[in-house]
Image 1 (cartoon, one colour):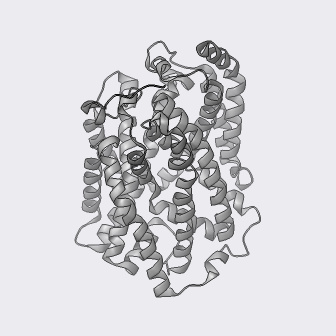
Image 2 (tube, rainbow, N blue to C red):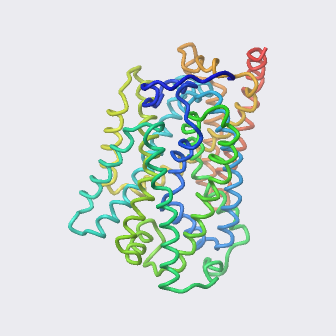
Image 3 (cartoon, one colour):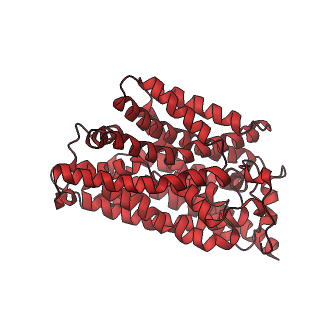
Length: 454
């Protein structure tokens, strides 16, 4: 891994390496990669989920669950980011060693589909805001505008466009948060009552656990981390693990947004249940055109990641299944068509259900990935990653697939086992996937890792 890194070529500076490891010559300086990644920290979703959990389990329980999530996300993504930086692998390529060439396609499908689903949610928020501010623009037209500009934005690469875009929008997002809180206080006044909000009958004692588990449903961010971190330079690995993809990022993403979300959701007079749409409409009523600008900034930043990762993983999926390289422009347009079609369809209840099931798959993938990294951390260098894109790998890695599907099936059973068991579905899936992969594949991985290191 040591040695001088040569200048980045023009082709590498615009490549997304959907089907190959990112070479050292195409790695990004820490500042630009930070700006590109921190586009993920802004979304109305983060504000709304915190407000919703506060109403369901109590504000203090929600904050405890968020703090525990910040720690868990920071530690796990620190491990994943170091490995991705060391190898240059994407989730699609890394999964080949876990599940085989065909088995890896399942992980790619889940990643691609989840990124698309989030693009639908966040894009719909922007379209609703645009329609509410300018009723002459119908929702279908607003959705079309949002999809078109979102697709156009991701035609630039992580290395030379998304970092600049999100670097400009980051301070605007933070200013928007401050303005939203200030106007809320000006309109409704301030009291500490937002800390005491909770369900009728009082907050349950175990509410903090339910809130922590709820945030496990967003572990898709572990996969997001992997696909962004692979662009990092080896000499910046500690910085990325500790700061960029670590706890400070989640302090902003979950804790800061969560505090603001709970305060806004419990202070602003919102009609009906707390949702992304209800919060957006309340902000538009409170902030006017500035509210539309704030929503545009938050949703554009997060959707650069959603559309980009959906496109790159669709590229990888098509090549995995057909051997053909469709290209970023073609896949970006396909993503746009899929997102627009689903934004117009009444499928949100089904999408939420699908996300709940996919969350179980993702949690299992994370557990297996961590065990694989722990066992092979000394035996895999960047030169060895060629094996993960070769045709010599088996179609199915039976050990990995068994650990993944076995833990996932158990998690789905728990998810459907009523409230007593459902809150343990994600944690149990995570622990069982780790234990199963360690028992089934640990011995062979340790032998291979020792041989490679020697």
